[in-house]
Amino acid sequence: MALLAFNDVHALYGRARILNGVTFAVDAGERVALVGRNGVGKTTVVNTLCGVTRISQGQVDVRGRPVKDLRGYTAAQNGIAIVMQGRGILPNLTVEENLLLGTATGRKGPWSLEKVQELFPILRERRGNPGLALSGGQQQMLAIGRALMANPDLLILDEPSEGLAPVIVDELAALLVKLGEDGIGILLIEQNISLIHRVAQRFYVLSKGAVAESGSLQNVTRDQLERHIAI
Image 1 (cartoon, rainbow, N blue to C red):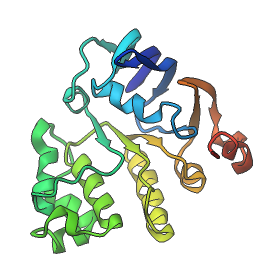
Image 2 (tube, rainbow, N blue to C red; image 1 turned 180 degrees about the vertical axis):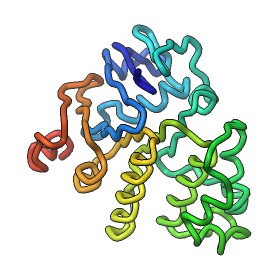
Image 3 (cartoon, one colour; image 1 turned 45 degrees about the vertical axis):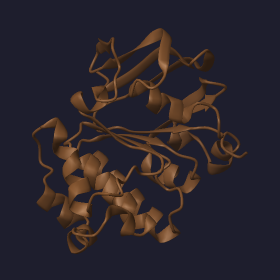
């Protein structure tokens, strides 16, 4: 049974239709990439899950059950943590306070403040600093750490490599593979081909608001994948 499934989802911003029958699924512990050029609707998938866009047709299922009323808190309540594009660090809160926001759902699990700080020691060292005082790579650690504090079954990351140095992207790839091996589902929304190939097991290509291609990454070369991403 899929942790998350979009079934023929059509979604609109106002009257503008952005998603035109999107269908995909992510199972427990599975690492899946959602790829495509800018403007094809990748972030709209996240916004639909958060209730920002309106579904006009189709449905979103969580663990095989349809979710009828998608709101900003729906994902978190259902064990889905989202690392938004731009990271969403709250500037008026310290590093530690940003992390503790992840506990708002009250979900029980292995992730705690101590464990996240063990994973990212810099977050312990800088715990009293404003969240935006961190470097770009450290802010991404903070965003991922905050998501893990919610003890999710599924982690969705929207363009997590954006603005990061290659060495940090390497660390991010290793972390996401490890989280998947530990049983957390990963939905990686990304254009960095190297990161996609190192992390994901399967992929979906989004084009014109619909899934145009899907399959195992074992059967797709980087050049084949790049033609779906290059602007």
